[in-house]
Image (cartoon, rainbow, N blue to C red; front, side, top):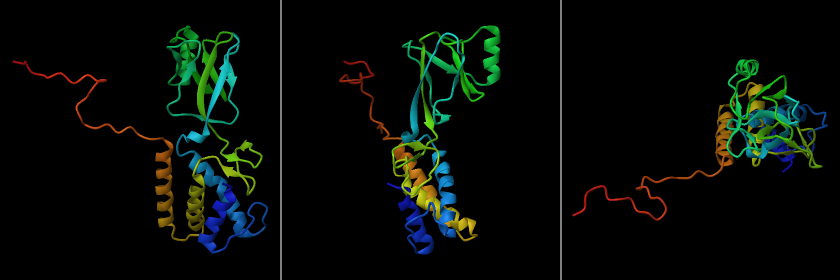
Length: 233
């Protein structure tokens, strides 16, 4: 759904009007909304690791290169992300706790198998140097939260026809705009902020997927019944 609908919904709640154009408009109110909507999207995007922004990257070693440029659209690593070594079915690359640890291991020629990684100088750095053909695969969060009419992902909204890549996020944009616009005008926005935070938490919970509910019933493995814990007879 185009972000135009989110901006129009916010406008109806704030001014009782429904402008047909925001981007490119010279009117003050529309310009204010345009100025705010990318800030709204950035706040929502940074709240958690949204599934729709997860992207997979593949880095292939050549036996020489230690540092690799960040993948296109890279924003940050996922909180639970691992860098997998696809040449090994057991071990993956391990993240170092600090750059100091990375330098220490490299200087002493020591480290866990198959190696360690760290992000610094806007690059992925590996030690030891990945062998030729050795592949490292990992997921990351993409910073391109906007989707143009031509299907191209980009790091900011630039047109009314753009879409928000976070599924169900249009309502969050509306609530955020209402809250922050009123706050900027020194109006009471307490309830508006609460509405936004509640909706954000609800969508974030759904985005993480279904949870398995485990009962407190006695454990069973397959079709095997739990053994009677006392002597029989």
